[in-house]
Length: 418
Image (cartoon, rainbow, N blue to C red; front, side):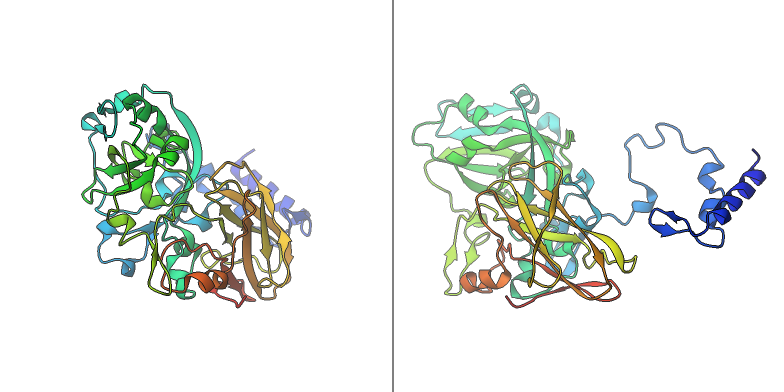
């Protein structure tokens, strides 16, 4: 069939089938050029293999990127950007979209010169290179990493208009690495060794104290994420994975682990990463990330564009204490709740995807989600948190998020009394 006869055939088919439902949309009376005209990609040969030796997203997805908020910090070397949660589905975050948080910029570590030292209260101080680490038994685990300051701007009310900015300091990937306990067993931890200090190789010399119980439980010394080596901004070639605990403890560019008999009380666990209460006292060592959720679609960066009718609400939930067996959603600001549909794999200390399908009648919506974790904990409202914590906090805000959707389908970050 020639191009001309093919176009005539398609035009005829489109007109003959006018009014028939296709994909939930009635066919137009006039021909649709997207159907009747041959697009360029059907008329010319495309690029062959190896045109892009490392595969990249489609040019039409160029808007799906991490974004920062310039006024949040004074300098990009000690700053953060945000995962575009509203553009993603499922539970795995692509490596190139995982949010970044740096205290001294990205360290470019030569893997040939990489070393990891274990010292302190051990029988035998040891130094490992990258190949040494890869000779230990390794494990694959899917976990979320959330910055303790995720949603921190929202303590004093609705601030940032988009779930990328309110909740985007999180990602969820498969880590491959060596259980930390195997390295500690190799060095031999002395009886008095009840804490360890993890130190990074970046210019900020990031350090965090970690109790030995956690180190021996589920921590990984990881070198791969989603099957490939860590990205430089994610700690290449080696980082610490501390499942369920605040991201600041997941020390990147890991260079040293010192075993001791008490916490070190360094900067990132005293003046920073503590929870300030209304009376001026600060609560320290609040490592675990409580159950939390957010509706990603619709949301301020993902408005309803198709008008009234059938639609799919989607979001993610997670808990640092286990799994998420249930998420409730409300369309009316909490007056009535329905149980969302959980979909996809459910892993410990990992993101969980939820959906709720409904027919939108075009009236305004007040959207919220409420996570239940496997310990029985239920995600609180922001007002419930403020009753205890006040409004001076930055960290560990896991309050329920509200999006107001108007008749045009545009969504906005708001708060409702509870």
